[in-house]
Length: 131
Image 1 (cartoon, one colour):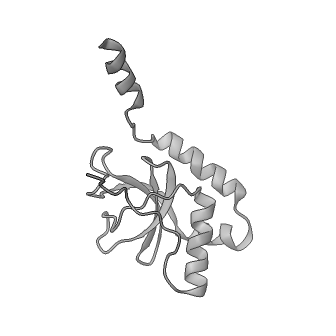
Image 2 (cartoon, rainbow, N blue to C red):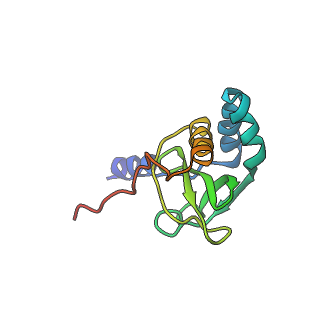
């Protein structure tokens, strides 16, 4: 019984720390070049925890790292990847996605969306309840 309890505790999700998040950001900044780096420098913010009611309550929300108009780039630390979502109220994410993109990919995707218009494509939807 003790083994099962320890195994469950080891597998429990833990929110990313701010230090770990900055490591992800610095890695992306190293990868970004030219127009994508310029774009990132315009939209990035100091990471802030924003609420997301579907899956974000346990970790106190998710880290938002960039804002561009009504779109944000945020880190889903459950799925370990960056996502693009809309927001209508500052501090609240409008839609949970579970992409596992690195930050440089999310920045490039948002840049292309802003440059060419259209909708965000390639968004991984939240888990489906199979019960």
